[in-house]
Image (tube, rainbow, N blue to C red; front, side, top):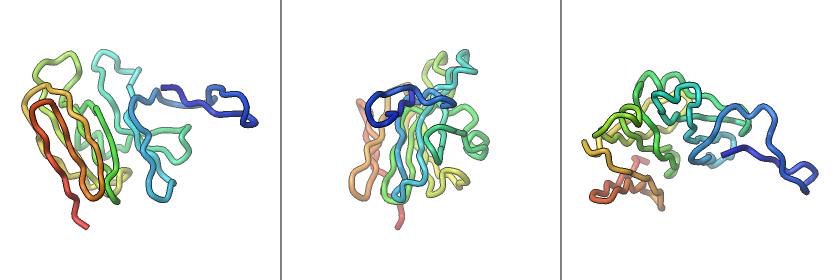
Amino acid sequence: GRLMEAAEQRVWAPVVGATLDLERGPIASRRRDLLVAEAFDHAHQDTALGRFVTSADAVHWQEPGNFRQRFPKLDITDVDRVGSWWVGVGLVGPTTERRRPTVAFATRDPERGPWVEHRLSRRDSPWHVVSFGAAAFFVSFDENVIFRPPK
């Protein structure tokens, strides 16, 4: 989606300088000082990886370097927040590959990590994450996994 703003609270217009095309999110931190989202990487359309990105101003987005180092081929499909934890899910490999394994990931600090991960399935099945109360629910057509983060 495009990032829009309302100049003088009347007319919406695209934000000049917005750096990414967001697909899912953004999700705000409790203090509203950090946003996390999933963005489409137009520079690498041949590999078609959804990127995990953060922003402090909703205009300038960046992918934490440690995330891509930890998950070099992860195609993000959904992100959310449960308590003080950021959670997400993605498929390993570009969308052109078949039968990609699915990985769930979580961290308290999306800009620095560390990251915990859990392999959900070996099927190329759509997964979503829904947070409710003190747990995150990773949901697909034939399997559900609940993540309850430590306090």
